[in-house]
Length: 91
Image 1 (cartoon, rainbow, N blue to C red):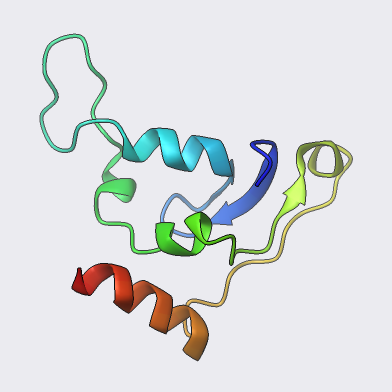
Image 2 (tube, helix red, strand yellow; image 1 turned 180 degrees about the horizontal axis):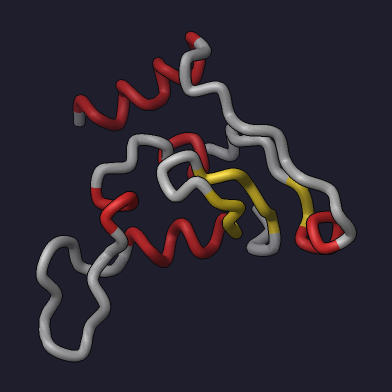
């Protein structure tokens, strides 16, 4: 997946690059050690990331996004998406 793909992040309620989603999850949760930024609260309890990792969220390229195109919002209630999310949560 290209790092310059944009998707709509439901927990953040904002458009985000797929690479930013992965980088935010690598930050420490809760209270961070000195000098480190903590993970954003919406990311700490996010269940949407398995869809981002498996490329199951609607995306548009960064160029198209800057040109005014917006990706659709992922349907978290779709049966296939629920299955992907549950598979990660159970692990």
